[in-house]
Length: 282
Ligand code: PLP
Image (tube, rainbow, N blue to C red; front, side, top):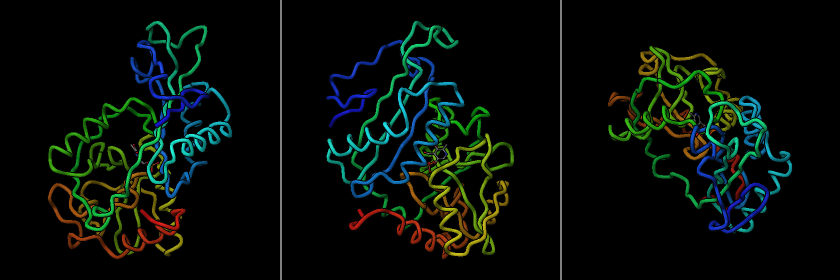
């Protein structure tokens, strides 16, 4: 498959990334993961807007306009004949002799994007998954979709070691989000989730889910839950581009509700599926 490298679509072996690339040395860059259903980018505008917002927040100059990026991503999908999968895209502050402060004069940013065939996690969407609490030791700008993911990586690894699908991060008693997802609890017919702030990534799937809540008449309260409240929820959900509306059926081996995906979870999954652009849902 071909790769988008800056403004060109090329063979993988043609891509040259310097060993002093600031993404490689400092994690000095940003990224996005966008889902492709049935040959179509899902919520592309929202992802592109978030990418450019992340760029602004770290004073990274994007190499071209949002429209041009959108068009190049479409070309990449067509070239690679991708029907169902994802695009991974990252932009770094470029290649320059290693010093912490920004290169001066500035160098061009380095953009790479590739496609990957993936399938929806249907078995897990049906059965639900296990999660565990992990202390949130990340920095205080989790709203930036930055390449610096060591805090997230260590949290996910701890979850996997405990045979869990995801880590539920908490700062002290306050639940923030997952290591690569947003978190929601449902109690007495109300959905609770952490408000958009510097402590979480404003998930695109989160926005879609909040729209789904309106559609099915599930009231939303954007308020952080404590760990204790989390365990008292009737239903619990995580969301991300790849995991979609994923039921969490236990946390630290304590069952949520009756330990099965609940009624509102199923309604949200159905409402979400109806937004997937497809004639054939894979
Ligand atoms: N929070 C974190 C830390 C993430 O890494 C992600 C995405 O992988 C999300 C939330 C969910 O965001 P989205 O729904 O845009 O994929």
